[in-house]
Length: 431
Image (cartoon, rainbow, N blue to C red; front, side, top):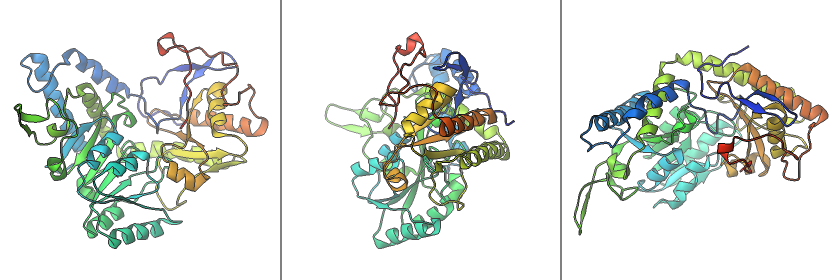
C-alpha cells in the first residue's frame, strides 16, 4: 500500500455518507485546490503573532513582517531557479499573474487550444492580438504547427501550459523555449499544474515568465507569483493604482516605483507569501526521485484501474508521447459526469472534480463539449484513496447507484449535515 508522502491538514478528515455513518475523506481533487501541508500551516501559525505592516513600520513586528516578505521572494526565486535579475511579482493566483503579464506584453501572443482559461482569456484584453494554435494528433505535429505560426508573423510571446490540467500531459518546455526564442518571441509558462509535481528551473530552461498558484502548491492562503524578466513589467502601467506602488505623489503627478512594488499596490498578502515560501521549502527539501516514485505509483494504479472498467474512457491528447502527472480525466458511458461525481462523494466519500475544468476549447475537442470527471493525486494521497475511487466506479458501472438522485444529479434526499459555520446549505457545483 502506498502511503502519503507528506502530512496535509485534513488528512484525518472524516465525511458523512448518505447511507449513514462516516468514512475517511479520499481527496482526489488535488489538481483543483491542494490542502495545506502540515508544515505550511505550522509556519503560518508561527508567523501570525508577528503579522503587521510592511516596509514603513518601525515596530519589531513590522520589521519581522518586512523581512519575512523579502525572504519569501528569495525562497520562491530559488525554488524555480530564477535568474539574478528576475522579478518575483506577488499575485493572487495564476490567473492574476497572466492578467498582469497581459497588461505588459508589447505585441501579439501565440497560445495553444489546450490551455486553461487563465492562459486564454487574459490575452483577449491585451494590447496585442491572441493567435491560437489547435493541437494536432501527435505532439511532433503540434510543435510543427506552433513553429509555423511563429514563423508566419512575428509574436512577442508564446504562452503555454507546463502540463494540461485536463489530461495531465507534460509539454516539452525545452522544445517550446527553443521555438519561441528562435523566432524572436519570449515564452511564458502556466505552471499551476506543473510546479507542484515537477522541479522547474526557469534559468536552465530559458523560460522567460512562470506563473503559479499557492493553492495548488499546498499553500491555500491566497497568494501566487509571476516570476520573470523585469523590463516589460517596468515599462507597463501599474496593474493597480494605489499606495505602495509609488515613489512620490503630488496633486498633479505621480512617480511610479519599479517592479515588484509597481504592480503590488495596497497592503500585500504577507501571510500568503510566507505560506507559499514554506511550501516551496517543503517541496524543495524532498528528493525529486521520491516525489516522482510516489506519484508514478499512484498515477499508474489510477490509470490502470480505470482502463479495466467497462465504459470508462480516459481523455488524452498524445497517448504514450509525454510524461504524465498524477491525474486522469474520464467519462463513464451513459452516466452524466455530475452524477458520477455526486455518487462518489455521497456513497463512497471520494472527492473528485467534474465539469469542463476551465478548459472549454479543449473539452470541445475531446468530448464535443460534454463534461467529464477528473481524479488527481498529490503528496497526501494514499493508494487506499485510489482504490476507493476504483471500487466505487466498479459498483457504478455494474449495478448503478444505491441512492436516488434528482434531475440535477444531486442526492435526494441528502441527509449529510454541513458544519454550522459553513452556512448549513450545500452549494451547487460544476463548471
